[in-house]
Image (cartoon, helix red, strand yellow):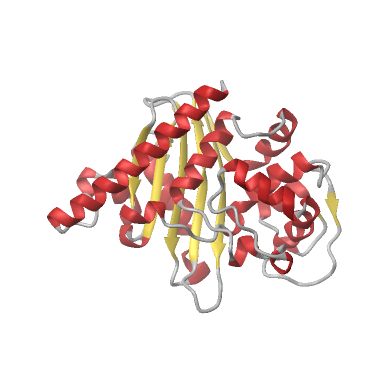
Length: 290
């Protein structure tokens, strides 16, 4: 099983490299930065949700037949700070290291008012994932420890796997040096969806259920948004995850990763998930809108 998963991962990396090379070649020969919208349903979906294909990257990968849909040209391999999408690997590592007992472990609010109202109260570790509560992860991540974090991120193939020095232990996923590309997010999440990461069954069983965003008849959407906001730099929005669909015209498991420039800051945040869900509907990975 592990050999098969490794082979699948190698084929995915090779296919993504070929895709990026083909897009760059097309740019050089034709002057187009990406295929015309009528030829690329993913790019068309982005445009319809107000996301520029020239300032974003979206990769979708179907596990069963290894088919890839993509938009963004060379940007699909460009690394960006993952922000709160890092809560996926951090949650897995927290359980594997015993830094947290489970999703029901409580955390007491310290009374300090923070960015989001939903952060300003007592909550569980499971709540913290779903609400993207930064201060709780700033407690949990140091518990894992620098050595185990580095080893774990490297084992996951999670971007550059860099956490910086001791002064960065509560900020490295928000401001850097940790960085990852859309294709690397897809490679990591494909292993998560297949359960071939170097983790115990218990860690999967505790972590994966809290990643569910929405469910319908015959499908489940898992994922996490992210927003990298550092003064003096372009804001970057993320939405990553996967869909498991057992029905419809195109059943399968679809892994996805989007990053996009957000010059308007948080006002543009709703476009992250909206653009990806439209693209997933276009290729049959989600049922049509009611």
